[in-house]
Image (cartoon, rainbow, N blue to C red):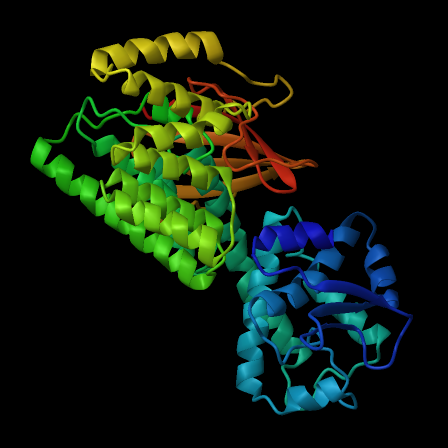
Length: 479
């Protein structure tokens, strides 16, 4: 569970050490200690209390651990003992030196982040917080009012406010991932932009930037021949890019530049949150190459490889693409050759396209013919990859009002057993998506794909570090 929670945060900071302390050790209930090494401590008795919640035992423990992890990832180095610190400990003395207003603010932040990221990791603690808090106060005989610290009543009130908001935000994040996977990039960007107001962080900014980057490619001039950039895990959308035909050339170029500018700002903002965050460096290099600033793209790759000591096959890919665009075909081919042997469709496609272009075959019609042949031989096109065990209900009445993400986008969610049913109302259609979360063990590269479908089927697989999302969906046009 601890690893699943830390993975949900997705931070490049090394996860803190989890230490289970002996039963009722003096001064320890649950706490994050910054020194001498980042550690989350939890009393063995508290773990047993969480276990007593039976089917909600994991949710209860996620509340406690998630709160302390929120302090760690938010750099609250003074930090708490989940609002239950004993006043006669060194930690308690440290807490008393911090203003009550500051404590309430930081505890509110920790509660928000813990509920949000725990929900993303698959734990639902919204409805058990109050009772769990009562049991902990009773177990450790804590007074309801600790001098200079939020009261138990204040803790509950803060949790109620945050819980109601988080319940509406988690479906927006999930809708953003699903919409991005289905290539509704504008709507997906709206979801992540909405989340930035509440949880500004590197992953949200990076996802927003990716959506803008991919949306921009709709506005490239017709006949543009692109390599497939390692920006998204679905290279099929780059083999057969869509174009918005309803916009004139001048406005197309303006829209193209505006979207890429928004994407660049988002990637730079993500990097400002975490200077070790490789995906945004990689995406920024791809963006520079797409805009024709090949030296800048190579500069980002050089900086990442040397300043940050990163080595990554996707970095090698974008370096090869930029070198080709600068006329250094020999070096581009040298870099792409070993990548093409990694049994990765993205690398193989780009290597074969490079060979095709180096042979002088750069006319659009010829490239399109080659694409069709390559797809027929290598991909295997299917229109429906659905697992029949994931049925989507024919009708859906969302519980309560849908959350207005933007003027033309609303999101709602219902929990059905172990799965979640999302409803997304867009301009022209309603999307209904059933999301099943599964544990995932194994490793993958960012560009690897479990399947390489050219056509959108009715099912998707989205892979995260420790979980998979299996998604079945229907898009229903409005009458």
